[in-house]
Image (cartoon, rainbow, N blue to C red):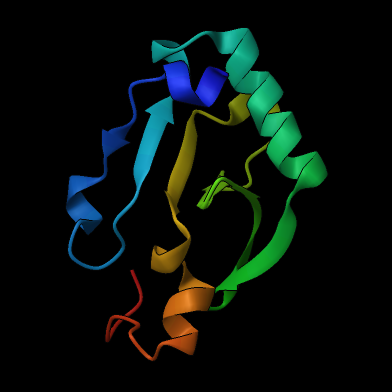
Length: 100
């Protein structure tokens, strides 16, 4: 599976507030990257992140999302553990004090 073959990089800037990982389009198989973007958008569900909404695809306890740019302009795919998602942290009352 493509996501398991990628070397996901930890987002250090948000390590304390929003731990997640990402892959960059030009560092992986670009055809598979585009296929994953399409898959996320076709099979994911919109969900909030503060006042913004993203399409999240849930697979094996992880959420995958992009920032919503057109597919041709999308350069990053993010993922986080379900327990680190906005919705779960909202339920747990463990949101960071301020928005990113």
